[in-house]
Image (cartoon, rainbow, N blue to C red; front, side, top):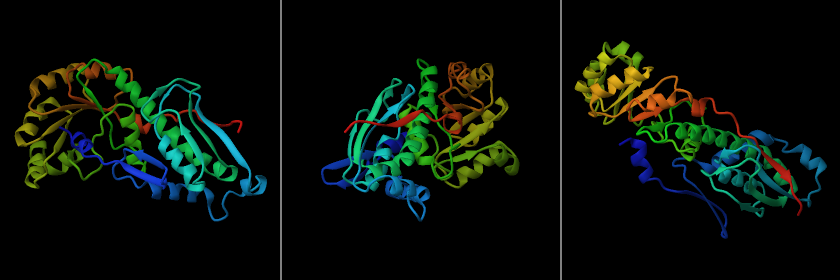
Length: 304
């Protein structure tokens, strides 16, 4: 079992309460919601604040809006958007119409909002940027998941995330149906080609990791002849790097179920099905976080 799988069973729900009558939950272990919201707004507001809204919008003006998706998407990040608006107007009225992880059609209204106009307009960009980015990741992830439906392979994400946004981006891949792989350098050994080059060979690198009492030892192999030495030395998971489907099938046969196998390297939507059908346990895809386009989501004026 992956550490991420075991960890999900122990996940606690992070809850932020702005008012006694309102509670909002996010399934993002280890994510500092309040700090993220504050830092993001501070970046946008600067020392002077939203000078446009302060100059143009009367202090007592109200603003009603709908957040809608202009694309067919898998939704992720709505509780974060909500937190942005509530940070600047704790009395804002929000009706969330869908939940994270849902697939919606183009034109779907995701939430309705009404609050102080200055606050709403000041929070708008931060809220939209977050939902657009995370929904884009969730949507692309869902496409990859659908491509391997019916196989025995599970889609994994990777560490190819933006610095500082890993927990959020990996949350988005979960909303799209992927399983989180390593969260960082700390939760499993990942012996790659450069580690092997310095250690001397695959077996020696694995033996050193095992001697360090590391429980999960993932080993990248780019040649079938490395498999036996990796397993014999104590590898608990093999990453089969940049192998074509026929080579993957041979590698899976050779492993014979002794450890989980993971296909990785250059996986695309048009190639993932054949890769998954090779019999590997997992397929990891960096593109779902590294290359996902933002979803087209807007905030439009509505009548009060």
